[in-house]
Length: 460
Image (cartoon, rainbow, N blue to C red; front, side, top):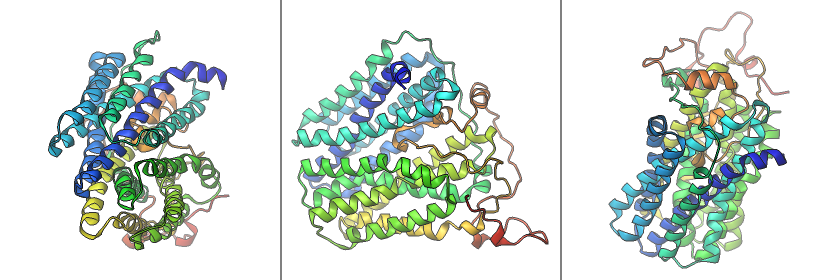
């Protein structure tokens, strides 16, 4: 462990500084607009723009890295992100802020791609799980520390924007000073959306729902807390405790995921989220103690959905398609996270701030209805399923290259798929779906010895 820390501390520090800046910026902008009595729709639009930039950066980042190399790409994007952050302090026009948020998201995605490809290049195949865990801890810790800065500096002045820009300047140092060789150039893996929609529709539904919920949480929870009468310091503590819950739950979640049916767990956690969010959805004014406890419990559950969906989908996709699967999951998450803040912002504007958690509860109930464990056919389940659960970093801090760090994905497959140009029109496997919902009917007629209730395999 000590050797791993010594080898990767520079990249972990770069990730930490990036996430401190990113977490602080999201909360600062929400609180700044709340102080100026701006509609929640604009707050949601800013977060949606950030996720749109992240999705866009997943496409552009490969080309930029291939053209100028990892270090130059990282330095360029860090400089652009720092300039865009300071631009928020120079311009008060909200449409311009939306453009700046797209630029920040795009630049940060390119930075994630550089760090993740570099981590994978330097990590031994047997150590990738530990390396990945360190990256996840650095990501969550950065987001938490970004919120706690508001506790120490509650004034919403330009100093906070300068501090965010300072974080992006400091994250340049360890990457620019490295003496290591550039990682090999990587090309985007083919996504094959039609194949995955057929093969793992319930997993994609869960990832989309997680994007709707978590994207709205990051963008609008600070506004909700502010409208509940919390001071800036209390908003920072509230957001920090909720994000810390996401880190805290990952290891118990892994224990459960490896022992019980993952589709059933997704449905149970979605139901728990719908129930946990109800007090905050019903009460227009929430006592401080109830707000912190209920918010913490909601976060414990909402940050479980995406990792479970990733593990569930990997159980039903062959190893040579898992790089493409990761890209598909992250794009689906990004689409949800782009739409969610806009929808939640509209209902908050129309019916009040408590509608944020009503939106969470509604999304969770839709997942309860959508996820049908008994409809899982297991026709394409991999031989060693359930695969070992991997604690995933927050999807706000990962790129399509995160598959290269996932110990479930064979390193040789990563190199083969992402160092050769993808097929412009990937072939779609006509295989029937694996986790198709029950209301759409079985994927194919059952044999004489098969019964629908026998197709859902329980975990040992």
